Length: 130
Ligand code: FES
Image (cartoon, rainbow, N blue to C red; front, side, top):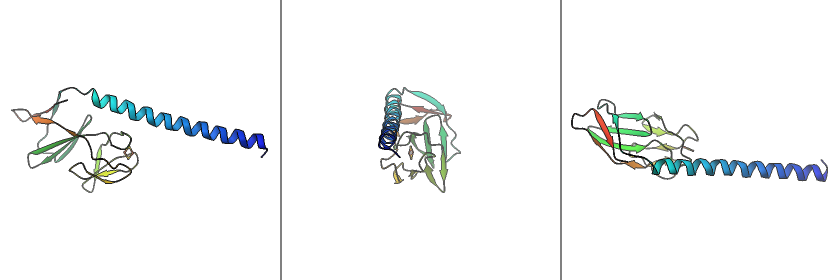
């Protein structure tokens, strides 16, 4: 490879790397803005499900003791929508959280964001306090 070809190869690789960093940064910032713009809302509540994924929320129901977490992974914001062997698992890079929202396997190291919520008087709705 000639000196010019090698230089061009390095420059293209560097440009690609910078583009990748900018894309990830944009995704992270956009997710943060969406999180900050949340409003109060009501979502259906199924008291018979121990773990439920609705919209942007993970609902953990331990014997009528309800905890709601943001469904966005604290690594790069992917939407989490499954549990495996009792752990909340991010589909993007495999981060795992326990049912208390604590990060137990990286790359995420922060806990899931806890969301303030209450159950409606008739027990059919979860009122998310944005
Ligand atoms: Fe969830 Fe990377 S976004 S592990």
